[in-house]
Length: 463
Image (tube, rainbow, N blue to C red):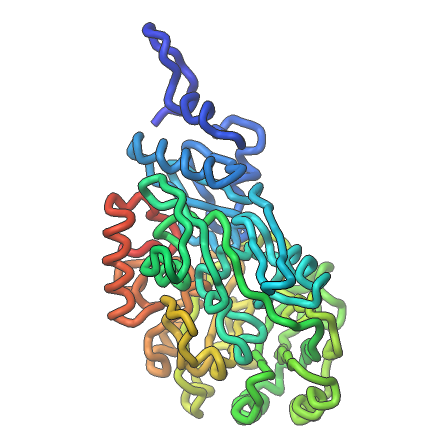
């Protein structure tokens, strides 16, 4: 549709002007200042192409945008930070990044979080009351988007998925209604939104339970990449005996010689052993000792830290990068699986895969949620994730090499993926992979009931 403002002879305004009159926030067209900022993604490989951006101030704005889009037969996508952007949004992009409402109730141990809030301010506000949310490897991501995909926390083995701790959601559905959703109100929608990645509606806020956590013992051991052949089976066996209060992951990093990378790691291939222990330092050190003795560390960042400093464990990038990513859930790490991994990303591999990670599952991540949700990877042994940077001169090589790595692991996987780490969704079979057949069928039925026209069709859309 044309987004140029015009007035016909009868004196009626153009459709976008009608929308502008209904919005408290802002309506932006491609030529407007701020348009490019609102459509920018943290994954810079995804470029949105909407006709209109609605910078929503509240749920009423979101509802107005959805109603207007439906009336003009335009699809709708939503974005807060763009960390989860995997497909270009066209039609109407609802930007929720201005929706920064945040409040913590220390009595009920809950936080109400607006759609645009990142985890960092939630961590800070909760910490004022000796409480904490379940956060993943980076506090820079949007809290709502992370949670709708399930949310795989650093301390997930102790407490389960982030979505398991959602108390209620405020969501705008495709009919333009603002609904309060919890176990007693629209329970089918409450089930589906927690783990489906949210394309049954636009979640404008959520209320989550908080935990009495203030610190942990954790960080990373950066080890020389050449020890990977012996380290990988040792890490597998070590993980098997860790208590649920302790989690670990293993990253394989091929780091470029760039000035913003720590000098000790610059231009090197290293194995990054990430460690998080909820308990005292003495116990944490005793648990970690076998891995610390395995080889002299290039860099050792493990220490007692405030829970608000969780980013120190994985040290994820803090600036937009164009990436290509894929993931798989692995049943176990038997010797054949380890051999396949080492052939693809070990010290002798010639690959453009910059980073891959094995993340230990189990513990509370394997148990059903107290209030059932749509998360589809309970009971899996390990999550595997790989990415390459789409930058010259290797950009054209990256997708093929990442895909080849994932194909090599198919015999060792049940075929499932974690939706937050899935990467670009492809055909229907690929889109279904994060869930069991029964769960996916139920999600499709709910999609047909709540969004029969497929108004929300971007990202990891169902149906």
